[in-house]
Length: 92
Image (cartoon, rainbow, N blue to C red):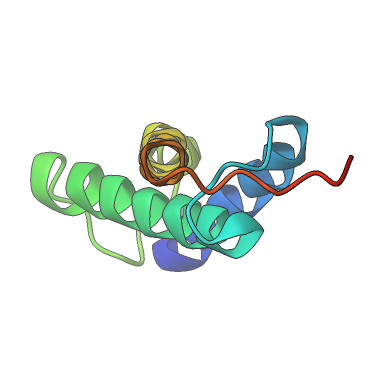
């Protein structure tokens, strides 16, 4: 059940990437992948490794463990996109 919570938190926060300029690596889909992977990694790291909880144990902390990883995952994918120069081409 924890994986479902981590995934939905990452998906919910991914929706806010529309307010950021589209410079993500592989566009909005890259932002989705970065958010979901980051949320799952941070959620699993905190819940399973640090706290020692089971995947079936859920509480409010389960929600909050996915938030930092989601933000870091989106930031990493954004920085990769900026460094590769994947800005959308504007026609003059």
